[in-house]
Length: 359
Image (cartoon, rainbow, N blue to C red):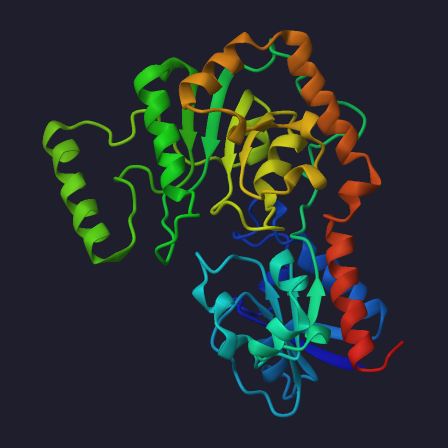
């Protein structure tokens, strides 16, 4: 039996495959449980690296979850699952780092579709690159046959935003962390009764990158502290379940961490569709090639938050329900299946089987 290790899950001890793990929020670890099960069915044993070492074994291959310093593991092959952009994980754009892997699973169309000569310049062979999509587990509460809380009346909150207070890890005009803050501030100033902010870290000012950013952050903490006021008045705290929060809202601002990066389509828009909440999306410039445009509101179509707000307020109940139903139809279509945990696992297992001549 082939033995593979998972590298990059800090706690280890196979916690990655444990549905009861405290880090399994909204069942985000389901893709790895499916991966482990599919691997076992194909004669491949998967564990976190510490478990394999505790058993006195050496892995035949190592599967890195995101970019971390490479651990030399004998003669075994090394694979990278490249989830994030280089704005968040800078090593994802480091050619020297990427060259160390025998295979790279990525959603990045610019990399996947690059001219072979360009890839050679990066020290990468085309055969090393494997297309994948970021998986999106279906919530337990999701119904494939009906929209949750169809229409306006069952949704008491007008618009919400769920995100953590973070910043990009490099200077790049494509980052959207700061744009989320602009959206929050606009609603707090102009439509406070129609907006609620959820997530972690919003009891303090906007997090910023760099030394100057840190100085601005520290200075921004002083006035709210002295005046005893909330930094973000719209803040409603963290959520135990994104599905529950989104099923109570008509709209949700779901901006990716970065914009204009082809293929970068994360859970944010899918979380909304699962709960029947109409997404206000900005991120992947080619999103409409994957998710029909009648499923979401494209923020790029508005010149200001004021124009967006007017559009939302004027939307009829019938037009709103049309968005909800279109989203449900997409989730029931074969097009969504490419974003499932099963599709994610199949892509990885098939590539490993090919490399080890198991097929």
